[in-house]
Each structure stands twice: as C-alpha cells, then as structure tokens.
Amino acid sequence: MNGMTTEKIAVSLPREILHGARRAVRRGRAPTISAYVAAALEQKTKLDDLEDLLTEMLDATGGPLTAAERRVADAALLGPNAGRKNKRRAK
Image (cartoon, rainbow, N blue to C red; front, side, top):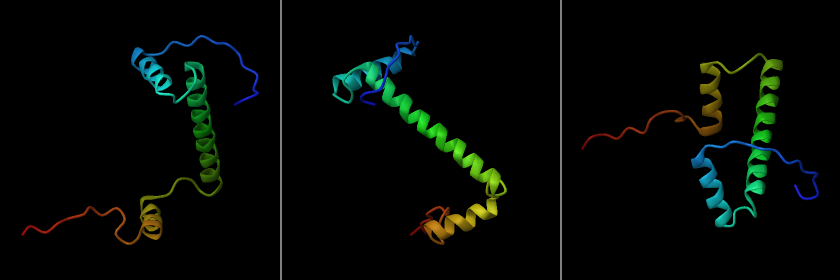
C-alpha cells in the first residue's frame, strides 16, 4: 500500500469494532487506525475477488459440486475417512 494515493472518507463503525482496531494499533499490528482499516478492506476486497472468480469458474464448469461430487473430492483430498465423525467405542 505504500506509495498509493489516498482519499479521506468518513466511516461509522460499531463501538466494539473500533475498540478492537484501537487495541490492534496499541499492540503494534498497524501504525494507525487508518492503516488498520485499509489493510482490512484490502483483505476483504481480495476475498470478494476470489469469490467472484470461483463463481465464474463454477458457472463455466457446470455449477457447484453436488453432495456426491463433494464426497468424492473430499475423499481424494482428505482421505477415505473425510467427513466421518471420530467415533470411539465405549469400554
């Protein structure tokens, strides 16, 4: 973000979120509240862009996975016990 042109805006935030941002600045996670908010908005923008890309990819390939397709994918990626709850036998 360094070297970017900035614009000043006014934003209303819930009190708890503002307190969290101030706490983060005090702990050194950002130099200012503005920097903290800018970083959060940057991350949110990236997530939104990824969500848009995923939607486009799914639309181009037939839509979201069915439940059966998801089970096959989970098993391939996570192993044959993917999605099963760990059941212990009573002793």
